Amino acid sequence: MQSIRLWQSCSDYINLCKHAVEICEDVEVPEFQGDTVIYAGIGGSAAAGDLLKDMLYDKPIKFSVSRATLPKYADENCLVVCVSYSGNTKETVEQFLQAKKRKCKVVCITSGGKLGRLCEKYGITSIKVPQNLLPRFALPYLLFASMIMAEKLGLLRLDLKETFRVMKTDEKKVKRVARKMYDKPIAVYTPYYFEGLARRFKNQLAENAKLMAKFETFPEAGHNEIECFYEDQGFKFLLLRDVKESDLLRKYFEGLKKLLRGFYYEEIFSKGRHIASRICSVLCFTELLSVEIAKLRGVKYWETKNINYIKNKL
Image 1 (cartoon, rainbow, N blue to C red):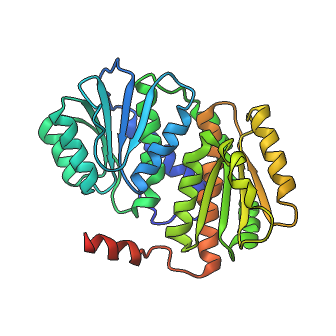
Image 2 (image 1 turned 45 degrees about the horizontal axis):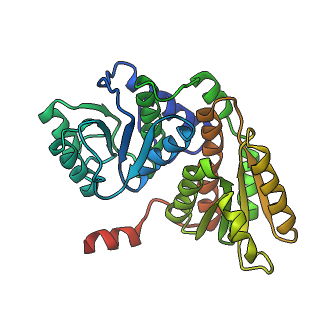
Image 3 (image 1 turned 90 degrees about the horizontal axis):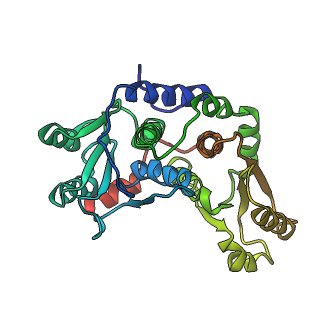
C-alpha cells in the first residue's frame, strides 16, 4: 500500500486503519497473565497509548503511558509495549533496554530503526508498520496495531465493522467548524475517559496548524476551570462528548454550555456502542479538523522548526 503523507479525507484515514488491521492479522503476541501494562512512547507514538488508555478506562487492568523512564514497579510480571514510529526515539529505546534488564515481557510497534533491530536481536514480538509517513500522521497504524494487540491479549473487545462505520465523518461539517474556529486559540472540554482524544487534538493543532490549544476534563473542570468564564479571554471552545456519558457528566456539560453563552462553541458527539468505536468516531473528526484548520491558516503543516530546534539542542 502506498504511503499517504497527509490524509486528505475520511476515506484516506480509514484505509490506513484497515491496512493496520491487515498487518496485525498473523502477529502472535506473548502469553500474558499479569494485570500491569506500560505503554512506552513519546510524542505521536504516545498518542496511541493515550487513546488505548481511554478505551481501557473501565477494565480491570493497570495501564499507564510512560514517556520518559520506565517506572520503578516494572518487573517480570509487567508487559511493556514499546512504540516508536521511527524506531530511533531515544527515550523509547532506553525504556526497551530497561524492560529487558528487569525481565519484563516486551512487545514493540515500529517501522524499523534501532528498536526494530533490537527486536530481531532478542526475538521480541514486533508489529512492523510502513515507513515514510510523518510520525504524527502514522497514528492510524500505531493506534490500530495497539488495539489489535490489546484484543489478542484479551484486554479489549473490538467490533471493527462498527468502528469503521462510525468513523465515516461528515466532512462538510468538519470544514464548517474549521472556518469558525481557525482564528483563535481553542479550549477543549471532554469527559475524563476521553482525555487522550483531547490531548491528541491539542497536539495536532500545535504541530499541524501552529495554533495554541488547551484541554480540561469533567468532572475535574467543574471544580476549578469553570470559575474563569466571566469575560472573553480569547478562546473558542470545542466540547467532545460521549453519546453514552453518565447523567452526572451530562449535567456538567449542560451547565458549561450555559456559562459559555456569548462565547463561540461547538459540540461533537461520539457514535457507536463500544468504547473503542466511540473514541475512534470522535478521533477521525478531530484529526481531519486539525488539517482543515492548518489549511485555513496557510501554514506549512509538514514543518516542525521549533521541535527540530529543541531536538538539536539535546
